[in-house]
Amino acid sequence: MSDLRADLSLALRLADEADAITTARFRARDLVVERKPDRTPVTDADVAVEDAIRAVLAVDAPGDQVAGEERGGVVGAGRAWVVDPIDGTKNFLRGVPVWATLIALVVDGTPVVGVVSAPALGRRWWASTGSGAFTSDASGTRRIAVSGVSDLADAYLSTTHLGTWTQYHSREAYLALVDACWENRAFGDFWQHCLVAEGAIDVAAEPIVNPWDVAPFQVLVREAGGRFSDLTGAERFDGGNVLSTNGHLHRPALAILAR
Image (cartoon, rainbow, N blue to C red; front, side):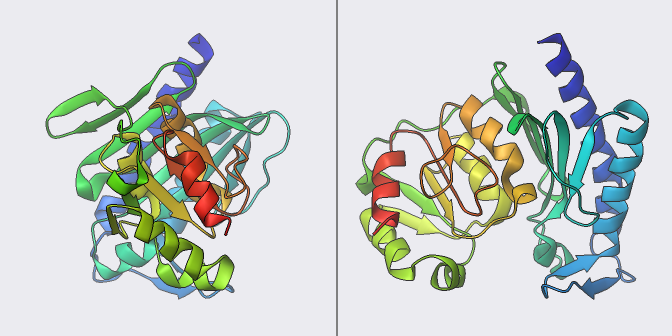
């Protein structure tokens, strides 16, 4: 556990570095925005954050692999840091304050440390294996846990974008899950999984994700008492899609999405 404490401390310091850059560039009039080959946007802040994180890791964890959204890299055996410098870039460039830096330490394919920092919301979430999940905001730091909702009819559900269900999975299956739940929203991206971990909502599902989009949530949701898997039920962050729940609702949600 002493090693994980040191790793968590490093991850939190990386988040501090990222926050200093992103808050300075958020709503900047000279923000540079380009389009990547996959047509998704990237800003100068995305690149600057990843470069800053890589620079710190090169000094403090020189033997570790790094895989990031903007500079690439792979997660193999051993230790790897998985980084999304700004999750929610479309929000960031439009001036919507719902975006975050995502940092995970993955050891032999399993995330063991996760940090999610959303400075424009004044929020941060973190977890490490065996030590619980936590959040901080203006009121201080507290341990978090998933909800106790045990029936989909009482559940609060979120996704990112309904259109992706049509393209990558099944719009009808997702709408069937919507119909089975009490309420639904599209909080989207990182925020919905953090809300699952802290018990504010009960189910979050996405039909298409990259590993860096969700790596921290495997450990965050698990340490908060929930379940995190791909849409086949495999507990992994690199399956291309994801379901996070309070645990009670995982099987029934998977069953509906499998239709």
